[in-house]
Image (tube, rainbow, N blue to C red; front, side):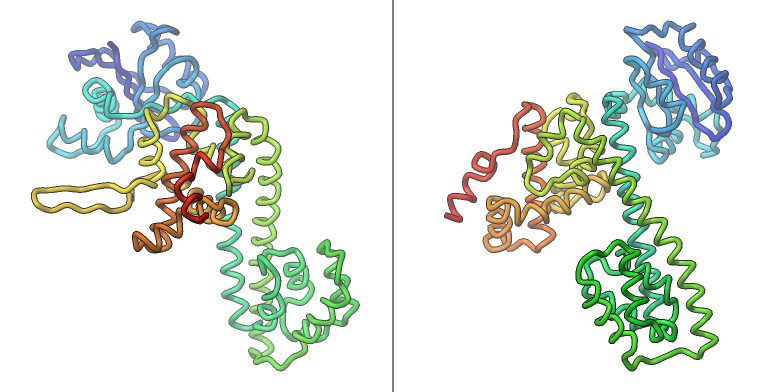
Length: 409
C-alpha cells in the first residue's frame, strides 16, 4: 500500500508518499492551480494509482478545488483535524517545531498506522452536495439576519422606543418588510411623529401589505405620536444615520435568506430521500434540507443508527474512570445537525401525538428538563430516520410511537 499526505495552504501544497514500512517514497511542492493538480495526479499515477485501487489521501481540509479533484472516482480522502495532526506530530519529533514538508509525512503516516480510526469523506451524490451548499448557506444567512436584527433592536432601544412598540405585535418584528420600510421612511422618532396616515399607508403598501392597511396605519400613527423620551436633536439625527446603516445590512440579509430559501425549495424535492425525510412530523423543506445536508445520502457512511446518533450529538456519552462514572450530553458533535435536531424535536411536539406523549413521559416520569427531554426525543426520531432511509419507507406514527400512543389513549 502507498499512502499520500498533503499539507494544504492557500497558494501551494506539499505532498508526500510513504509505503507500508513508513519509508518516504517521494515528495513534491505543487501550486494551487490546474497545473499543480496535474502534477499531483501524475505523481500518484507514477506510484501505482489506479481507478479501481486508488491511493488514499490525508489532508487537513474537507473543501476546496484540490479536494474536489481528489474525490473523483473511488479514492478515499481523509480530512484530518489539525489538532489531531498536531498530536501525531509529537510521535515523529520532540522539538515541536512545525514544518509543511514534515506535516505531509505525518499525515501520510496517520493513514499508514491508524486509517481504521479515521472516517473518509462520504461518497455523497452531486445533488446531495449541492443541497448541502444551499442549506448551509441559508442557515448561515438566517443566523446573520438574526444578528443584524438584534443589533438594530439594541440601537433602537437607545433612542427610538416608539418603533419597537409599534412593531411588537408583528411576527418576526424588525425582519418584516413593513418594519424596514417604515424605518427607512422615518429613521428618527421626530420624523415618525410627523408621518400622516397616508404616508404610513403608502409605506405599508410598498412593503407588500394588502389587508388591514388603514387600521394598521391608524394604530402606527397613534404609537408614533405618543409621549416618548427623546435624545437631544443632534444626537438623535446621528443615531438615525447609524440606524440606516444597520438597516442596509438587515435588508441584504433578509433578501439573501429569501433567495436561498427559494433555491432550497427548488433543489431539495428533486432528491430521492426528500419524500422520506419530509414524511417525519416537524420536518419541512427547509429543515429537511438541513438534515440531509449533514447526514448525506451515502448509506455506508454510518455503520448503524448509533453512529448517526453520536454524530448528531443526540445520544448521551458515558465516561468511566476507576470508581467514578458520569453520563453527560455530547460536546463534540455536528453543531449544524444538532441545531436542526433541536428545531425538529420542538416542531414535532404539535405535529405528532406520539412525540408529544414521549416528551411528556420524559418530563413527568423521568424528571428530565425541557432541553434534555427534547434531546431524548431527537435521539429517538433520528434513529427512526436512519431506519426509514435505509429501508426506503415513510414515517408511520403507529410504528414509531406504539407505547406512547397507547398510554396517551
